[in-house]
Length: 178
Image (tube, rainbow, N blue to C red; front, side, top):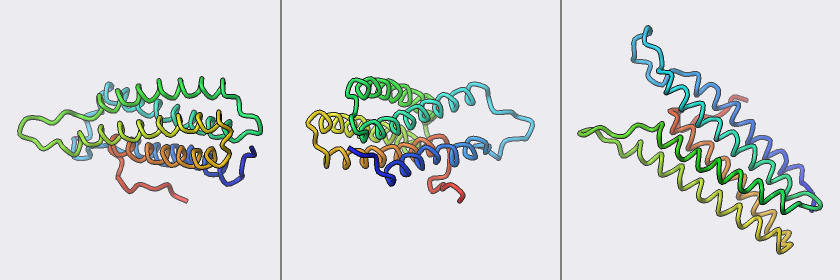
């Protein structure tokens, strides 16, 4: 199999999205109505950094998996190890987002916030499912299936980026500046 220029560019763009969108989103004060003298608690910053770190690891692994899957001779052993790493990072990301998104207080509507945790879970589950399909298609030498699976993987990574940034308090329609 050959690595197409379009797929490589798309995978690189996905990773670049993290840098372009996550940086300003995390730098922005999530609660501007607070007095200026009050600093963001250190635990909140640590939670956000853990979440961003897990997200970055997943995006990086996803890009590496996509590139390796499209190599002339993909190494299934290497891909299975990366799959294991991605699954571990996905579990860390789920836990981090769940810890970061506040529980609704009694009398306060919290459905929207809790839905963000469910959205992250749903996207991560789809990512793992599509990765499993990619490995099955590679083992079966299904070239057309591999190309479609890499595209699905890229879409899952982009969707994951969006929901995690939203869970971190970034605007839903945030787009990188050109």
